Amino acid sequence: MKRVPALFAFLFILLCGCATTKIDWNSRVGNYTYDDAIAELGVPDRQATLTDGSIVGEWLQYRGGAYGTTYYSRYSRFHTYDVHEFPDRFLRLTFGPDRQLRASTSFAR
Image (cartoon, rainbow, N blue to C red; front, side, top):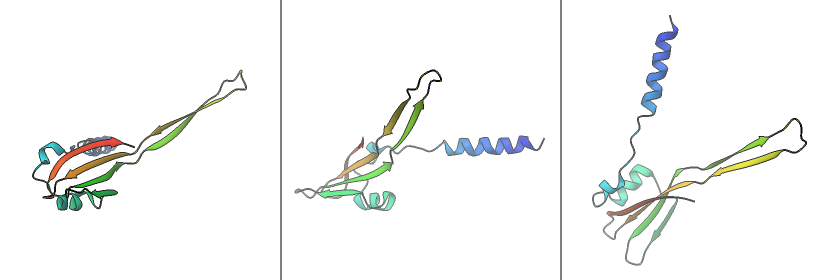
């Protein structure tokens, strides 16, 4: 009977970990500053200042990865090895000359 509370605790922790909310960047347009982004996301991985004073910054969201799969056959001496790669995911935020958020995009590279 001691396993039942442990199982409930495990399921509770699992469900709480899956309940993260995704940020709606479109709702932050116009009222989110560059300084807010630095405080929340840290220093951008890449940053550029355009001629009109706009700032474009890119933050790494998820690191990509790769894994390989090997297929064997008992009756053949040939084997195959497949490599599956996933790119890095980035968030690009564009701030106007007034340092207010203008646009956001998410992309893979």
